[in-house]
Image (cartoon, rainbow, N blue to C red):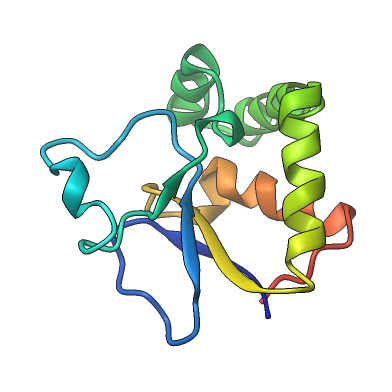
Amino acid sequence: MGIRIVRLGTPRAPGEGLRLGTVRRPPRGVPKAEFATRDFYDTWLPNLAPSAPLMAEGQAAASDKEWAAFKRKFHAEMKQPEASHLLDALAALSHQTSFAIGCYCEDEQHCHRSVLRELLAERGAKIE
């Protein structure tokens, strides 16, 4: 049981469970009916993705200082009640079932899912 942090579109691990897409936009060129079968996601949670302007800022971050600014702003967005309550629920569920959250980015260290990992851990989530 627990949460796996994954790159969407990669093969699922055995026992991974439900895959949640924490992205602003669905995968391009993939029919909605194929999102799950092509290992993108089973359920879409755009509320856990950075806002469109912040996502652009994070993708453009070229220095540690710019990345730190992105992280600070994303933390602020995740403090909003809708996102915060969802993070609390996922952290609690991680002790009862297995599931994964993810994004398309190749490098987790420069992806908002690394921040989600931190936020979930702060809430006591069980992370695999």
